[in-house]
Length: 635
Image (tube, rainbow, N blue to C red; front, side, top):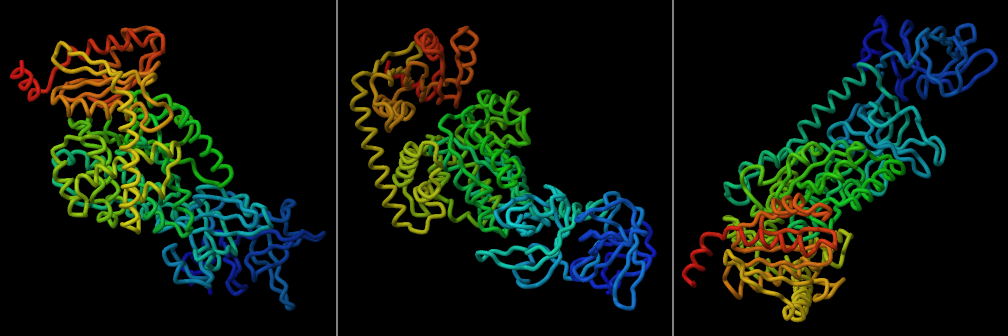
């Protein structure tokens, strides 16, 4: 082939061009007057031997040599002579290889990642950029993307020795190799890997950017229910979907942090499934889905320093051991409040982007300097009744619309788990009923999720939680039996806890007419078992609401915390926490949550004054109008 036949090399008279022959090129592809990139493969007293390809080698005589190159160095050479015996002589050009643009002369077919599965056994060329470099006990594996996908490219120097040490993460490269399969997955066995520079690199990156922008676009799906409250949030969700798909296309790991409760799992599990399925369509490595997307539960409704230090440590280890990029952090059903800021400041020391989808009452001025996207119903005039699970089911469908039929019951489970009184709850329950779940089934699923999460503690429990929620579960009968078992045990443990706790509940009627129930969960509830203090307080509260039919506030408190629940009273727990923090110096008051569900922390010595001041604020709160009318009639 000639240079012009190669399609990208021009002619021998192109000034400033340095040609890079691929491994299949022969001497017939070399023209006098053109400059070529060569690699020194040996040195002798009278010069150096160089390789231009597997089939083109020759000598640069010392008289034609500048400097003192060593084996492995790159030179720019021109053809000097071809002797009768076939020996080839080159002259070294007075050019630094690092300062020139190289143009490939192709000896095989140009392909994209998406073409590789149909080219097993073929020698091909692939241009892209390096998104991961992993050194194994054998070859060095370069993960290369071209915008259509990502493929592992195995280059062997020696066992455990880094091949192509000059190639770094994000470099544009041209890989020549044979398409092979390893454990039923496609990979390239590298014959040659060249780092592109200048215009050649810019062209590759522009091509990749265009392809990524097109493929990262989220799916335009209709919402599962017609609900005006979702409309202003859909554009924000689409922006998050686009960023998550971009992460997959650039092989950036995603760490999915979520509150370890029913709504948090209903939000995070569909996202995890959608991302893993999208990863499988992009990455030829079958292990990519497991490595690139991990779901991590958080016990607290905010990002604790314990969580962030563990996440950072693992991320830095993965970068060192596996050549991964630092991850993107996706906060789900938490992440909106000022309590998250210390952890965000820790991440701000590194290249770790943060996305948030949450429905807790937000502190946007505090968190938004640290987050790239923040989706929250409060930012659009809505409130906590739009649960994170409802939002994330729509987000998951934007990432991978094929999962829609598997998620019809999930928003209803999320709403019932978080006791949402949203206008759309009837529609979500009807959608679940069409999928084979009545309301009792949905409540059992939520109860089983809470019970499993309690015992899993910091473990995501991917397989178990998938079976409980019936997402990516292949056995419907097993799912039903598992939920029945877990939900039954959960109800049993709750009943035993409340039977022992209720004789110790203090009751009073507040000035606004609401009932206040208090329980010292430190002394009158079992510790380190199910249900935890928050769940115990919530179950006690629900019993009192059902028993009285009146506005009810319930406080479960320990030595340094209080869990708060309210029905029929217009509380603003985040605001109350802020006021208490200002009113009590040295009390260490912090906390937050929804308007009517939350928690508060304080130093143990200040529990009594802080809780009493909190009760006074509750006594001044307004009642919901419907319940106020009921109280007036009773009085």
